[in-house]
Length: 363
Ligand SMILES: [Zn+2]
Image: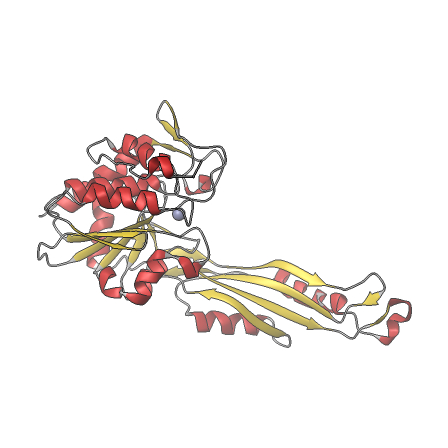
């Protein structure tokens, strides 16, 4: 049996109510790297709508309106999921829809599909993007690929990423940086320990600095981002009778979007002054940009008090292209990737309704 062979002609009916459409999207399994069948189904479902210009790049599908409006909004979401864990096909129990992808983030995918199909004359032009490979290493990310190769396809004044936020606007995101702090020593036989310098003992100074570190809460454009500097790994020692000559403490710095990557790096080097610090990974944050008129209008239309997005998301890719971007989508983000991932379908309906109202207001 070939996985996916039975669903090569999978169809999505965009006239289905959004809870049913979410269930149908979830039931087309699309673990990262296996998005083709779902991308095919999305492309096929959108093609009949004459107000959309549909473009396919790999397993990323883009649909654009082109009404000559004064501004353009990008509405984006990833179509892949983390691996299935006995949680497909989806199940319904009262208002809850249970199964892989219901939270992260096929409710958002279904909302965007419904809006694309049925809001034929939005008050601002819209570029919808359904992209592949978000749940794996950044180099494969479909949105990142477009941003590198054809940024013109993502051009707009403002972007909404439909990751789960429990239908609350979450602005921007923190940046993230990983580094290794290297503590040197001098090897010796542990029976003659005084001949060496124990790198693991010396690492205590690094741990002391981490314990003493006071992470900042940083106000950026009116939202408060909580920073953090944490040890996420430690390695040292080669044998039970050798004084270790090296200990490596891996740290992760989550930094407010008011800092650039270079500033974040300088900050970490400052904290561990006197030790060798090797940068291993870094991604910039994104300012919330809620004072941008398009973003402000969206916040006003969907209601509620916006909050800061603490974890890194693809909004940073829009920010890097110079566009304000926020997160807004159905589903409790705390349930993302859990085996009992589940969403209240009323939240998906609310998201659809609010975004539809926004896209049709003042048009
Ligand atoms: Zn996600």
